[in-house]
Amino acid sequence: MTYNNPLLEKSLHFAARIVKLYQYLAKEKKEIIISKQIIRSGTSIGANANEAVYGVSQADFIAKLQISLKETAETEYWLRLLNLSGYIDDMQAQSLIDDCLEIKRILIASLKTAKGKKN
Image (cartoon, rainbow, N blue to C red; front, side, top):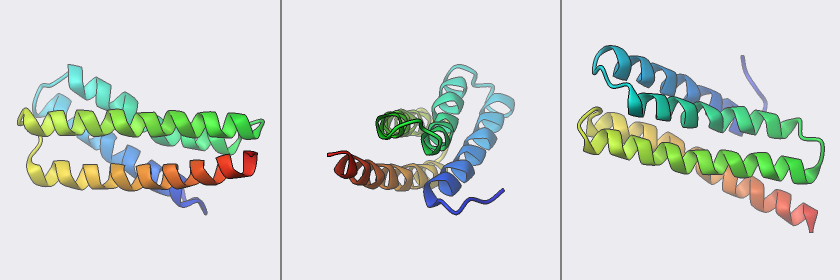
């Protein structure tokens, strides 16, 4: 599945990486608590961005993107915690964090544009 929207495309691919991370954490590391947290937040980023595209109003669009932005912050936190606690190595963590931060930058730019149109 491909989108013409970079945010949707990147967040979908990021979600797939998060699903693989969840599987690794659950099967290989036997880590359940944090893995459930990160799969919720990491897949929610794209789900909310996708919902925003179909928002019924500009305010709805902005609200969904705000949720996506908050989910990037939570996901970044869990990634850093997984790294600090030794569940994922520095290279894995940095790659995922870099992707998360790229999505965060796109969301911030999209929100600035959307809020500018609203005013």
